[in-house]
Length: 319
Image 1 (cartoon, rainbow, N blue to C red):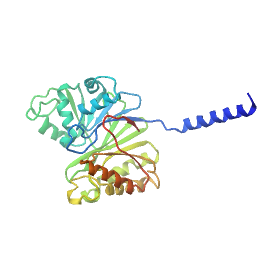
Image 2 (cartoon, rainbow, N blue to C red):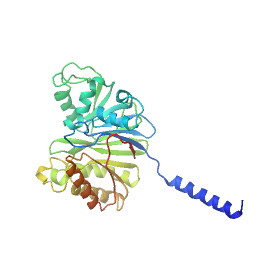
Image 3 (cartoon, helix red, strand yellow):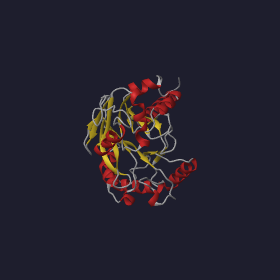
């Protein structure tokens, strides 16, 4: 072997080593069970999140569960039966608010599910106990509330901004208040695993329309995590295109309003702090023409250079 060839091999080895070292490792895996904001009952808001290389998933909202797991099994994300994914891999549910497009999968699948914890803030938990798991609308599969509690689910009430361990996982969660047609309350969940974080927002309107400071409060709390590159992505809704009048937003975001909120976040976290940052766009409302328009408008107004991710039902991605 010539001296030149040895030099070339050494150079290539060092180059590939540097590339490998710079490639960021994923912290979380995500399996979308439902991605839309309405109409299609087989594809409503629900996202499985787990630390990478584990099967310890928490379900972020639960509008669609069974149909979404079936899609994931079809896509070979999971190599066990749908019923086993439900019973063994899903360790619990984080429910942002009690609207049916965020809880119907939890309710319908409860007879076939295994024992686990359902986490929600007080108002959301009260609505589920009083209106769903109440022995009238549906059997009470919880361990609290009216009727006869079957005690399959442990209903755990979250205190805002208080860190709570997620049972049977290495993750913790902090809940933050959101406004979804003020004064109706939705929630955001900041999930932590080790030094890594992911942020999931339930339905929310922009602060200026909701006459609220909930989003600014949330952005202030997470800005240091963005500065330190600990926050791996934000799940946030965009339900309507820009043409939707404010009075008909019903506590939702448009592309323009999302970008205005992200500008507020960047002001708090520092210039260019969101360049390349992962924004997972959720809750797009049908029809398809609306969804196409929303995506085009988001691309047009993305002056921060964020990485826009559009989840697909049953297809895994990483953060």
